[in-house]
Each structure stands twice: as structure tokens, then as C-alpha cells.
Length: 146
Length: 443
Image (tube, rainbow over all chains, first blue to last red; front, side, top):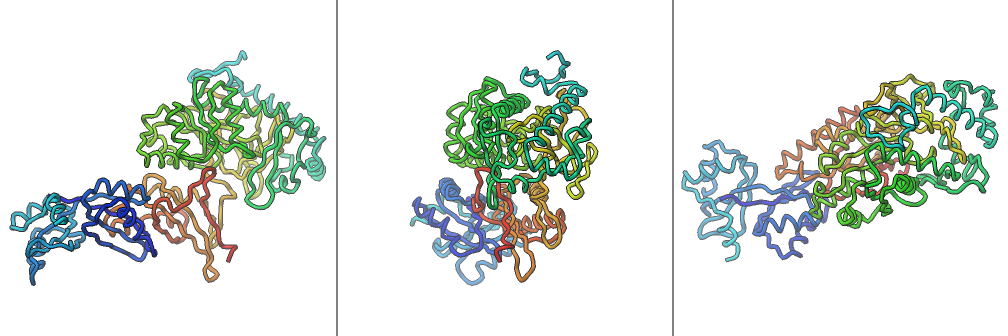
């Protein structure tokens, strides 16, 4: 149920973001979604790609420091209050969200959001017990191609 | 040789002089010292003038302690007498010249007679033997060949030992790795920082060092730390030995660690050592830390009298478990002239290194940049982010940044700027690592 996410260290200066993106482009790897966290000093680029093992190698060969972590993709109703309801479940279970970001595609009337939890296994349990759909990576990769 | 030999060491006939009874060794040193001082006095105007200034003649040297009456020789003396001013032999007798890469202006030039070259090879043979290398080994010599003494010094030593030498010289890392793998290399000689670079590149190429027959590294030409050794040994599965030498004295082979890895044995039959207070020049007792001062006891073409090495160390007087009677110095982690002064505080790159090691466990690639902003000195430590410390969480990286800053501040006593940089952004060196970039004079 978990999805692999690649993170890349970036120095905070012009042109740095294009290095990993160009490397993936040249290898013909499509980025499903990404988010960029930045401080004054440095940035962390987080990516979801289908062929994450090959992408990690491509990025390493391009000289990037790459880290692989597990995140969870959750379906959230795409209507007012959809996010708030989902967050309520998470808060009640005392799950800590490190960060989150959304996919550009939708599934029917649902948006898909990536969550990074400290305890992903516990999070999956809680979410499913509360009727929230966790999207597996195979499903996720399929969706991106439709 | 008829002398008693230590029981624990694997005895190699080449190393007999390492085991002389101390009284015999001191006798040999004294007779050689007297001869070399006479030679310097007779043939080198600078030495004669300096001794006359002090009112000392070669006849005043009656004990080893009398060396303290002689004047020091500094690196600037070699520069001032460039190129051949300190030679004690006519060119007809000199068979080799080497020169050090001077960072400013002219290099310094050193000379060898045929006999000097033989002595050099003999101390290198003893060096290799001390770390367990023998005729069955295949030695990849990645020290630079040329004017630098490292390449030819290690080359002739390994060859005289009977080992197979691959004179690959420095650089072209991918080819180094190919040869390491394909030729079944068992011993590599290079600077420790270059070996780290080779390991890093081999890792990227998917080569497991532990699967290679490589078992010994003879690393020198720059200061390195015990933590760096541990990292190299654990990550590559080889035994990493520290070799010491400097062109002014002979090149590599002034001293080396034995298999105990507990300090460097100095080949005292050829090199007389003293430890002095770097500020006053006063000789310090064994065990105390100070600057190493060396006198060559058998070098003909270019005797060095009380040469100030600027290397900071201490003599370990207690006998080594290996049984060698030649004494050891502590590994040299810093040089008195590596030191830079920032906002009135003396800083050694090794202090920054130990702070980085303390936080990260292994030594990342780093560089120190000194600048002057609005009349105030700034020190920035650039540290490459490694996969081991990188995290997808901003908080974790910020915590790492903070830990690095406070560890450095704690070690050197002043606040510095720490900048996390992407891997491979700090220039790799194929020879001595350049840790400090001082741009303060350019502004």
C-alpha cells in the first residue's frame, strides 16, 4: 500500500532544480508528481515516479544525493470539507504528518494526496479502518497513464 | 646481523637495522652525525656561515645532544639558495634532482648521489616490509611520478623489495580502478584523500572493494586522522598504513607505521629526530608535543641540518610491541603552517575534521573558505551531503546543519558559517587535498 518516494538534495541557487529534472527527462522517465521544500540554504526535491529504482540510479549517476522513503497516497473527496474530514481521522489517531502534497490527476470525484507519516504502517491501518482509500503504487502508476 | 630480534614481528632481513640494540644505534647515529656536520661545514657556505655565527665547529659535536648547538634550517633557506645552493656534492656526483611544487614562486630543489638513491630505496624497502608487504605483492603506485618524490620513491623501494610495481602514477581514477581489479593488485600507494576518491568512484561503478585482492594501502604525503583510517579499513577491507616523508629530507620513507598501527617508526639510523617548541625552538623531552626537527645522517648530496618540518607530533619513547628498537612518533595530524588565524584564533583544518567526524561518523568531503567581509574575517565550512546523512525531512537536515555548526564552534571556539553542498561540488585532488581556500588577500 506504500509508495516509494525519491528525495534529492539541492543547493538553494538558480539552475539547481533543472539538473535532476533534465537527467530524468533524458532517461525518458515521467514525473508523476513532485514537491519542493526549501529553506534559505537548501532545498529538498521529492518525486514520485513509476520506475523509481531506475530513476534513483539515473539521479545518482547525475551526481545527486538520493534518498528513498515510503509515503502513502490517499484518496480525498474533491469537495469543500474533503481534506478537513481526512485530517480529522489522522489527528484523532495521533498520527504525525511530516509533509504532504497532491497529485495533478484525479480519480473520479476524488483527489489523490501524498502523505509522509512517521509511522506509515499504523497510518494505513487507521485510514482503512475509517473507510479512507489508500491507493497502492500499482494502481497509482496505472492511473497516471490514463 | 647477529643482533637480537623482536619475537612478535615477522622478520624480514631487509629490516635488520630496525632492530639494532639502542646503544649500538646511538653509536651509529653519533658517528654519522659527526661526519655529516663536517661535510656540511666543508661544502655548504650557508651552513658554515651559520655555524660560525654561533661559534660552533664540527669538533664541538661529541654527543648526540650536541646537535642542539647547531642552527636550524628552514624551508626559506632552500628557497633563498635556489636552485643548488645547499648542495654538498658537485654535479658530477649527483644522479637525481627532485623539486617540490612551491605554492608561491620558485620550487625547492633537492639532490641525490648514487649512494643517496640507494639509501632512499633501502628505507622504502624497510617501510614496505614494516606493513607486511613482500616480493609476492603487486603494488599499484598511484603517487605522482615526476619532480614530486612520492612516485619514484615508492617505485624504487617496491622494486628493490622484489614486489611487482605498476607505475600508474596519479589521476585517471577510472583507469586506476580497472587496473586494481584486473591486475589483482594487493598494495596501493597514494594520498589518503585520493584513495577515498577512488573508493567513492568504485562505489558509483558498483565495485565492491572487499571482493578485490587489495589488502594494504600505503598512504602519505598529507596529514590524515585515525578516524579516516578506521573508515578506510572498514569500508574497503584493507589495512591502511601511514607513511611519512618529505622531499627536503629524502622523500617518502623517513618513517612508517608497522603492523601494530601505533605510531610511525622513524628510520633513526638515517634520520636524527628532535621535538622542539615551535615558538621558542627549545628541545622538548620525549612524549611532549611539538615540532619535528630532522637531521639527515647519511645524505651526501644535500645534508639537512636540524630541518624544521613544521609537522606537529611527539616521540613515543616506550618500546613498540613489534620489537623494533627504532623509536616512533605519533601520527601527524597537523602542521604548524597549516594553521590559519581567524579573528585572532589559531585554527587547524584537523580540528574542523574531527568535529565533522564526531557528527557524521565518517569524514565527508569538506572545504574551508576564508573571506573578508566589511573588514571582518569570515570562515565558511562547506560540507558535502552524503546519502548516509541525507533525509527527505527539512527538519532533519536543519538539525544536521545545526549539529555541524555547534560541533565546529565547540572545537575551535568561534562561530563559523556551515553550508551543506551537493556531492561532487568540492574539487577532488589527485595529490594532496586542498582543504583551505584563503581569499582574504584578494579583496
